Each structure stands twice: as structure tokens, then as C-alpha cells.
Length: 197
Image 1 (cartoon, rainbow, N blue to C red):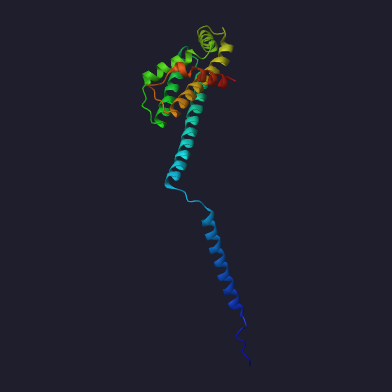
Image 2: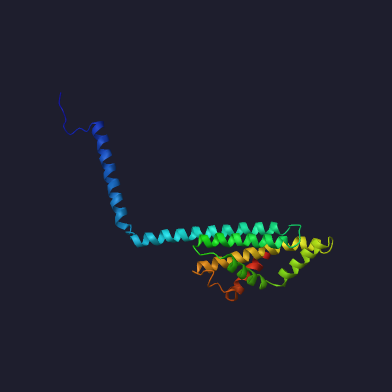
């Protein structure tokens, strides 16, 4: 029987294909490494910081939205002036959470003064709606329907505008101590009108 040394057995063919596949994978990996730029540690830190910043903004928006819906619910409290107390409590909780999120020292007295100053700049609908609704509570039937529809919307819009204004201030690196209601009034009014639509 004549043996042919050049004959390729099925086993040798299979092994050759396996080696060729490994070589192709290795060449592909080298080519990918050649075209992929190296990422420096500083760039990695910036990417992580950007992700953290976006996550913080998302959480801040969630805090404000929760407070806005709670404030709308507080607007239907049946006892006169109690809705205002509830609204202020909701806003203080919101600002406490935002301050903690941004690492800002919180002062309840300072925050109340800022909120009152901002609220006064909203527009006449805020004062008019509040008076109408609470008079309706004292004298049932008098402007009760209009107030019932107005006050929840005003309370929610006011809370939303306060929260958004504080987010912007904190995003710029501000604190409660350097918060100037006068310089943020235009932005606050824009957010109040936006939430009222």
C-alpha cells in the first residue's frame, strides 16, 4: 500500500481551520487596538462626573415634581389658612432635600424668607386666588367653586417654580446665603407661568 504524506486527513483540516480562526481573531483584536484611542484617567474622571451630574439633575427634578403634586393636594384642605401651612411645610421639605442633594447647608428661616420673597413676585393671581379660596372656606358658597379650582393649581405652580429656581441656583454653585430673590425673579416667574398652563 502506498502512503501519501501530503494527504490531509479530516482531523488535520479541522485543526488547520481552528488555527486560522485564532489568527483572524488575533489580527482583528490588534487592528481594533490600533484604531481605538487611549482614554486617559482624567478623561475617565470627566465621564464619571458627567454621569453623576446627570443623575443628580434627574433626582432634583423628581424631588420638585413630587412636591408639586403634594402641593396641589394641599390646596384642597378644607380649613382656612391650613392649606398655606401645609404648602409651606411641603416646600421646606423639598428645599431640604434639594440642599442635601447638592451638599448645601440648609437654614429653614432663611429658606422661608426666600420663598416668601419669590412668592410675592409671582403675579396677582397668587394673592387673588389665595384670598378667594380662603374666604370661600369662611363663607361656604362664596367663591368656593372658583377657589377650589384655583388654589391647588397655584400651590402646585408656586412649588414647582420655587424648586426649579433653587435647582438653577445650586447648579451654578450657589448657596442659601448668596441667594438673591431679585436676580432670580424673572426665571421664577417664567417657571411659575409654565407650570400654571
